Length: 268
Picture 1 (cartoon, rainbow, N blue to C red):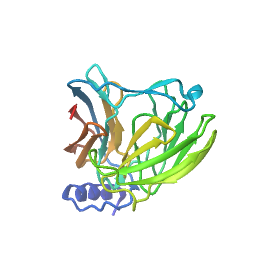
Picture 2: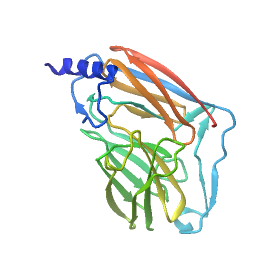
Picture 3: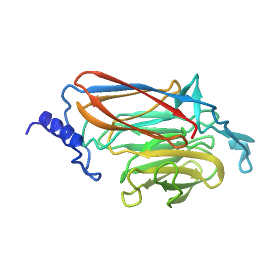
Picture 4: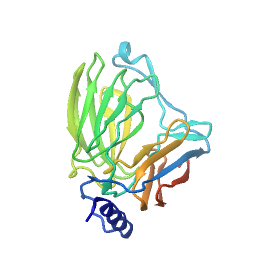
């Protein structure tokens, strides 16, 4: 069986539903890949940011902070994770950097390669953008660029409206240091959602959607997203936001074609 025909078989099996949630993703050659692009909009009243009077370390964090959980610009929604489900073979993971909104300077950096290598860089009392992605059974590096201690506290949730299932990690990150943690398959449900918080600074809150392949995107400040290099076939696409919920689509990716989609969210 050639590598190209193998991708065709993978797409066929995904279409029929003969997949396993625990199947390992493989990097294989993709013949005539397609592309998925689109926009995400928001309708209705935009929730106001939550404001905080900073009690600990105001000299580093500032005396006041705000947390924007629903970020809308000209009717377009930022921070929605778009993810193709159960793709078992295709392109390699790509290098991406997702930056936090001001005043924080944190970021989520994903390295290119065979797996999703996430580095959470904490700076100015901020882990990174409000939303991102994470993978099971792959180490995540948490780097603290601040001159103060942060206490990483991660939780696992099932869906967007569920109560907290359990604590996954609760560990201090010393000033100017790095720790490494792993979200194991045994601790993450399917679908999985992870919350990042800091026990010392309650305005530090971030959300990660669990992915098992590199076919994902996060909508930008213009509500736009794109996913390329997709093996042709039929797929299940999830659009997820930690506050606004989940929408799902079945999408057909044609060879060397650009498939366009639009999502519209509103306050629940």
